[in-house]
Amino acid sequence: MKIPFNKPTAVGAELANIADALARGHLSGDGYYTKRSQQWLEDRLGCRKALLTHSCTGALEMAAILCDLAPGDEVIMPSYTFVSTANAFALRGAVPVFVDVRADTVNIDERLIEAAITPRTKAIAVVHYAGVACEMDAIMDIANRHNLLVVEDAAQALLATYKGRNLGTIGHFGCISFHETKNLISGEGGALLINDERFIERAEIVREKGTNRSRFLRGEVDKYTWVDIGSSFLPSELVAAFLEAQLAHGDEVIARRRAIWARYYAGLSALAKAGAFELPRAEYGDRVANAHIFYVLPDSLATRMALAAHLKARDMLSVSHYVPLHSSPGGQRWGRASGSFTVTDDLAARLLRLPIYYGITDAEVDAVIDTVKAFYAARGFDQ
Ligand SMILES: *Cc1c(COP(=O)(O)O)cnc(C)c1O
Image (cartoon, rainbow, N blue to C red):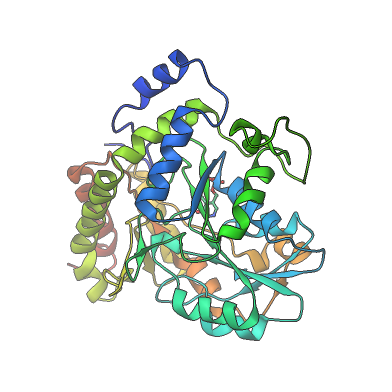
C-alpha cells in the first residue's frame, strides 16, 4: 500500500468542461468558465468581487499593488507562513514585519500586532493556517484603530468560516489558492476576493496588464490603453474550466475531507491523551475549519523525524511545513522580526502533516493510523 501525501483528483465534469471550453473557441482568460467560477465565488462566499488569478501568489501580488505601498512601508504578518505572503510585499519594496503565532491555532498572535506597528505600517497580512480562522474581530479592530488594510492569505481556507462569515471576505482583500495541494484545485490557480468597493476598478486594471481592457470589453470605453501598473494575472480558460467543476462539488469535497480528518482524530486521540503527541483542536466554537491539514505534534524534532522515517519506510508520506520566515535568508534580507518566536520555532520543529486528500480511502487512513500506533508502541505507548 503506497500512500502519497497528496493526490489530485477530478470530482466531476473537469475534462468535459475543458473540451467544452475549446468548443466555445476561447482559451485565453476571462471566458465562460472564468465568469462562472467568479460568480460561484461571489455567490457562495459573499464577497463584493472575485477575480480569478493564475495562483494565490498572483492574488497576493495584486493585493500588494492595491495596498499602494511605498518603499520602506511595513506589512505585519506571521513568520510561520509560505514565502508568497511575504514576497508579494517585498516585491513592492515594502518590509515584511514578522511576529510569532499562537500555539492553539498556528495563526498570527493578535496580541503581538500592536507592538509591531510603526508610523510606516500600512497593512496586516493574516494567514488562516490549515483553514482555521485567525482572531478576526481583534485583528479588524486593530486595523480600524490604526487605519491599516487587512489582506487575508486564505490560500488554505476556502469554505472555512469565522462567526458564519467565509474566510477571505472579512479583510479588505482575500487571496485563495487552487494549487493542487489545496482543497479545491485547478493545478495552479487562485482568486483575489475584493471586499471593499473602492478597490474593484483598479483591481481589474492591475489584473489586465495595467490596461482598462475590462471596461473596453464591457463597452464602457471605445479603446483600451495603458493606464496603471499591472501584470498578467489571468488564468487560461483551460484552468478555469477544470476549476468550475471542482467548485460545483466544493461542499462534497470539504465534507469528505472533514470525515477523513475526524477519522484521524478519533484514531489517534488515545495516543494523544497518553502524551505521545499533541493534536490540533477538533472544535473552535464559532469557527468552522475546512479540514485542509491534519497534523500531529510529537515531543521533539528528533521524534518527528523518526516518525516520518517510520512512515516513509512503509510507503506513507508525511511532511513537515514551513521554515519560519524570520530565520530564512530571504526573511533576514527583506524582512524585520518583531519580538521573539518561541511558538513559531517550536511548532516548526515538531509539526508533521499526515496524508489527507479527497481520494484517500478509509482503509488507507486506518493504515496510516496503525503505522503511527506501531511507531509509538515500540516506544512504550501501548494504545
Ligand atoms: C499555497 C499557499 C500559497 C500559495 O498559493 P499558490 O496558489 O501556489 O500561489 C500562499 N500562502 C499560503 C498560506 C499557502 O498555503
